[in-house]
Amino acid sequence: MNNVFRISSIPALACDTSICDICDLKFHLTLKLQVLSDEARFWGAFGFYAILTSAYLVSGLSGGFMTFFTSISMLTAWISFCLSVKSFGRLSLRTTMSYIIPLIPCVAYGVYFGGFLSQFVIEKMGMMGSLPPPYGYYVPDVIVASLVGILTGWCVGPLMPICGGWLARLSILQFLLHFTVFSLAISCQFFPYATSAPKRVVFQHTIHTAGSSQIMESTYDFSVTDSNSLLFLFQHAPEVAKELNVTSDFSIESALVSQRQDWIAIFPVSFLFSNSVKFSANKDDILKQYEFFPKLFVQNPNLNYEKGSRRVHLELHLGSLEEIWVTVLNITGPLSNWSFADNVLPGTETYGGGPQSFICRLSGPSDSNWTFWLEANSSEALRVDLAVLDQKLVGPAKRLKGLFPDWVDVTAYSSFMSSYIF
Image 1: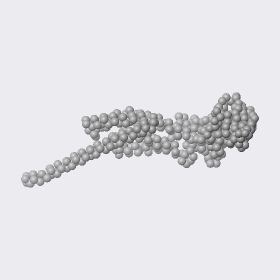
Image 2: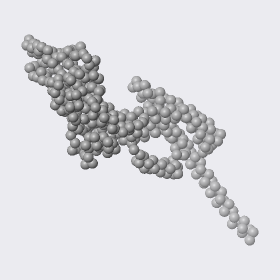
Image 3: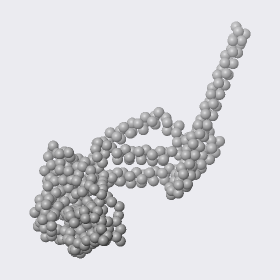
Image 4: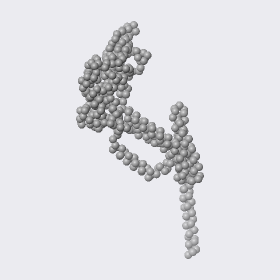
């Protein structure tokens, strides 16, 4: 029995030895594959940042220092990682930390720069204007989400060649997924505006005049520079809605639309607006406040038949306005020269869907008149649309502005508009 036992046990020992050899071989193969994978990921990422640095230098841009700093930091971290592998092994946490620690300044600066850039872009997206629906509600969010994704990749990119194996664990991925879903669910319950991040509203008291003392129309014009429309504003500002007689069945489509040419006083900011609305306002309060309105007068038209042109000399009276910020002239027609800007005409503008025109902005004290001339190269009439922005509001408009809640940042002013044919 003993001999039989010894003879039968020899193959078993040999089999155990073979299994150990196979396991050891698999371990070494797995380790070599991991080594090659780590080196491939690292040198791929390092080459990517090095190529970006070269592209910055060749193109003459001034942002290559960031990618250069990232490349140098990654090279230093790789040297530290290789030295740590010899002492602690490749799978040790100390080895991973030896790669992370030299990258801390690089990652910290990336987080600082990314946070600053994200805040800047988010503010600009809030000021870029209300884009037409339905895509206008999502375009700013898509831009901000794309930027945050790019900046996140920028910050964690140098860490991924070595730390990717740790971050790709199922438990960590599940945590990130649950945290993202939870954050989305919570953020949807919060009101999107506050005093630190207000909703921006432009409130213009528009007065269309004829002559120096006659009012043709008086309206309150509203527009927003956020993705949420004015309907959202009236729903959450009931006192404003009550003052403007906005009912629960109010819709932007059924309201009186404020045309883009009505906002010429703040050109070119008005290009940010869409779906602007207006409400009728009382004229008597304006007549009580102002004795005279802005008006253009013809001094002495001069026809120059030799050059085939005519010159119109004009004088601008600013009336009784007290806090004038800017005066805008929108000139349409065969304008060939004027007395502004060293007799140099700017490029034409197409404003409010109308014909091509020349726009001139004037600023100066309200107690002085402007004298200038316009020259036309044909007998066709020149049309001049005048808009004067007065920062002062009359009583009802000022009271209406005070009804807006604290989370609304209101830019309010009066705009006196008139048109002339010469």
